[in-house]
Length: 236
Image (cartoon, rainbow, N blue to C red; front, side, top):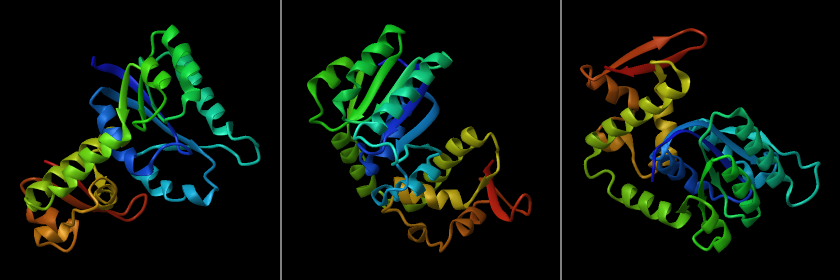
């Protein structure tokens, strides 16, 4: 599939599988640069509380859909409005929709009229209409298989895996924050979501900071007091 210049990722949190979000973002990034990540839902609902950490770690903006608005399609409508906003900003040549809801099929047809390509991440048994209309379909089940295989192979080379994970976090967070100094705490937060079976203790270190300090030729570590106290690092 062709590489896109700018991709917007819109997630229907009421319809998407939380475990798939990290792998989905990784897969979508292979298609081009992601400029926008938004998740839609009523965040006051208890069943969505686990999304908070994932959205924070993956830099996904949570768009609140108030529970005061009745109707099962209220989140769908909010997401459609978000998609049209992306269209009128005229800076995205592709939109990634994370949902299996066939109600979004008319939205795909509308965006195609303005030459916006559509990537859909959804269940393998999503409607044929949804699969047929999008330009690329990624199944949640396949993402979970890939993720499981990656996690099962982790810890075989713990030090090598730790370096790879650090560089992965650094590259993503540096691009997102436009800051070359990244809080060390972000490594652990990212690892819990993307590689939950990996433990820094498998490298013989109790903490990430101790691991980083052992490899002074690869990383800088500093203690910052402004705007708040934090231990940060950057790759050399």
